[in-house]
Length: 175
Image (cartoon, rainbow, N blue to C red; front, side, top):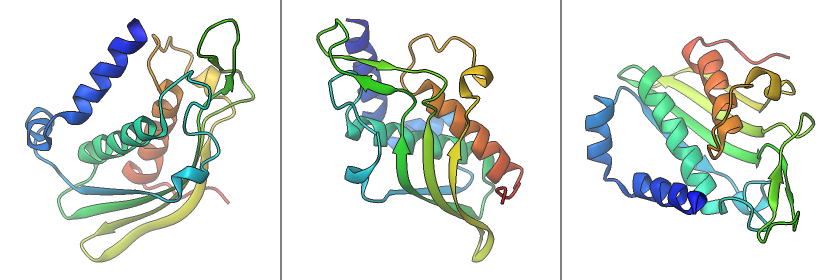
């Protein structure tokens, strides 16, 4: 029942008209363009055994997250193009597991992973451009707060940290 209510709340948020969201968050600063490249080939972006959200819900939530982060950080005249090349959610689907729809098991060897290609521009000038794998093997230690059952909790925290380091602070990727 609780899962159904969360899913309905997520769908209601996604269905809200964009002008209403802009009023709540304030004026839009910069622009974020998110493109999912061959999502049907992603490592693990959907529940294959009914233990979590569908691919469509996962992609919608990731798009919303990137756009929200961009609205907070990007200045007028800046744009960020993000190509999501792969998604591997934290944990793994465990079919059965004594529950009708299976279960997602998260442990320290199953961190969330994203492969991203991105370009940050100010006007027509490219400020930052890279392709990188985004992951954190210490995710369970770093994000030890209780997730309170939030969907995509670890992915959200990982991408917030990445966005802060790469886009807000403009620290280039290692290597």
